[in-house]
Length: 58
Image 1 (cartoon, one colour):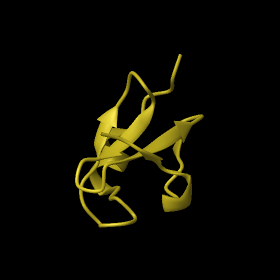
Image 2 (tube, one colour):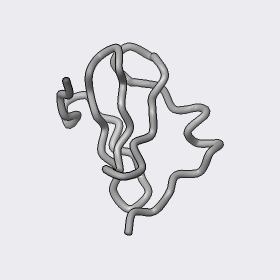
Image 3 (spheres, rainbow, N blue to C red):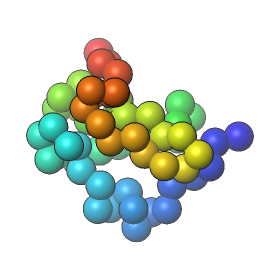
Image 4 (cartoon, rainbow, N blue to C red):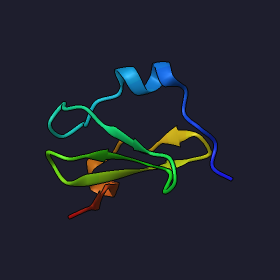
């Protein structure tokens, strides 16, 4: 089961590419930037906020 992110952390995190807000996809354990269409995975409760490692979304 994926570890949930702290709400305070979610409030301060921003997309490293556009500096926009991120949506938390708890089911798939990732953070989504709708503007850039990128998904940043979360491993062990730690967001991997590297643009090079982000997955493109639709």
